[in-house]
Image 1: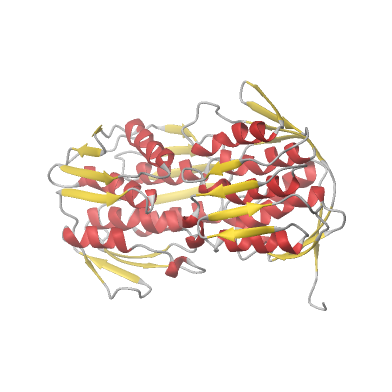
Image 2: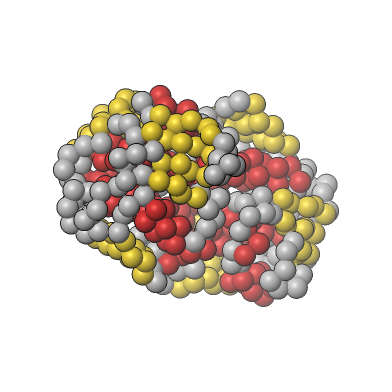
Length: 425
């Protein structure tokens, strides 16, 4: 699907979609519980569907009906499973330890860039505690053997997803475990979200001096019914659109959320935008913007849209650092956002761990490729509001990974986006 966006200022109000990060965690905890859980989730993305299907393969019964997900826990009757994680790194990294804790012989497969995304630190630690893997660097990933309790360790600057997967698995083991996180710790907010989910489902984890102490033989307790909070990561695109031109309100956001990406309001305010909060509604309105410096170690998912804000600023230079992990996402996001901004007239430069964005040139419009990355599609849609001419985004269906109704909401705010055929170009 190729989308042509005609520049138009966005104004109005949209409802926040349910947090993908929270939904992954709640789904897994629900599947490990003893009784059925009903999850209220207003956005069923491809990543969430992948996790649901994998949990079904492990013996749960997950049924999705519009904005409701009913989860019956794993039956304990499955001994072998094939888990298609599609392109979801969270699904793969969360469920590798969980499947091993359940003692299920598993084959993990997927598509897109997933086969090339790193898992070696998690693999090595699981091998130290009783799990056998198929040949390294090959896909599918096959595992067998039951994970054993013990003293685990994981570097904190590799992937918080490895930590989350182990935190879900270790309470299920026969025996107590520890999980030491070796500083520096990046994306700490995602670990905090995991700990919060575990607590909601009755799992006790004690933390002291970068070490988690986890009792074995714990039982996940169903919440009965639970709502997935609004997603700050996806709200950031429309809030940034309001900052660069117009005024946009996103409803259904928890301003006390553990989601690290809620700092988008602070970043946009620091750049000069007007930000106001009324209950669960956040409004960002355009004012003259200037470039700033951003340390992205805890907010890697915001880098593409912050880059767009920098390119749309009226003055100054935006410098984003500590974002090297973005090269291992659905795309090499640093290279992808740099190329896309160049294609529509922005001058910028990649660094090993970030990007420098100048505002000397105004955005012209042009053709960009999605790199099969949902955050690149949404970022370039936001950039279009400041362009002089149309922006054509190729393979824009990548938004389905996290926000299937993105263009519907984009249009509701006054955006002009049309599906086109570019085969003849």
